[in-house]
Image (tube, rainbow, N blue to C red):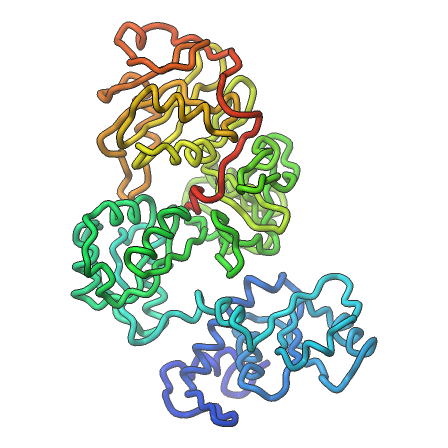
Length: 510
């Protein structure tokens, strides 16, 4: 829709920063700026909820939500169908289905009109006057002009630019920079700058939690952190200690795929699969079956359910600069974008991160995801940080090696492995490297390439489990120079599963 003064989207955008009253309804008054901000939040939500080419239906009286959603549709370039609330039964159902509304915005007043209607094909409802709706909008509407965004992650990484600096720019919020991330200075900086929001990647949250607790840990203005890889356990610990909620998400650095957390997302999951996102088996390229989870949330069919996340829908990724080989690995037939990240999905469509494709191990003919093994080893009481990676098997494929930061006792560790019901027969580490501090990259992610490169011949103490044995002993120089025999035996650990509990999962990679 256009006018002589521009499109509707341009007119909505032009009201940003205009703090004059702009919308009255009963006792409620919104400024032009609040309308524009509310429309932008709903437009961001709309792009996640509405499949490409589908239509948005609005079944409301004249409430503020109506113009807010009209404006949101203009910003998101979506078509709107106004649904007549005076119609009933089959006529109302026909209006919704004929206009191909895949998403219907309504409120509790109008819900009885939809009872018993045959809305075949699937119409998703969003009910505006509920707490669930407020929570649904919260991740999009949280940026405010009086906020201060604390940018402590490196700005060469997309996390700091896209999820921290850019939202501050849009909201007109302030930005406080930290030259380099420092866990010990985190709370001091947050207080000095009166920061309200921050982002994180890698092990940053773990490092902050490792600082000495104090009675004033909640003496600050922070209300939200957004990032990846904190994991459900550390996120809960962070909220208990600092009173700050962490929201996890996933986004490929190239922009080719993204997953947003939603209220109702199970513990350990990143969020629901949006239209176009599928999980494909690495060998057959067929869509993987849903994950089979036990009552504790442990994955039972990892070999079948884990695959690469692929975006078959629209993608802003245009390619790599002067790197056609890398581009061909990402962009495949029909414009599919292959993320290079492993996921599995549950029966309800929620996605769980399972590591990078580079982190997949092939042990005795079985595909394993390193993140799944890490999730299990992270339960070990002495572990402060764990990384699992492949070292070459002398015959074929890989052997499992783990780096562990923290207290390690070989007998306790072997007993711990025996007690894990979801530790598959090929998943127990052949080697355990005990490190004082986990090596990390500039973005605080574990430096897996370095660990793989150094293998068993490293400066740190390494413990190993010889073939046919369940006990670990110290690896000697003579052992390291030998063949380190291929592990072709049935291990005395766990069951036949291949997964992990969602409660200790890696949340996402950026």
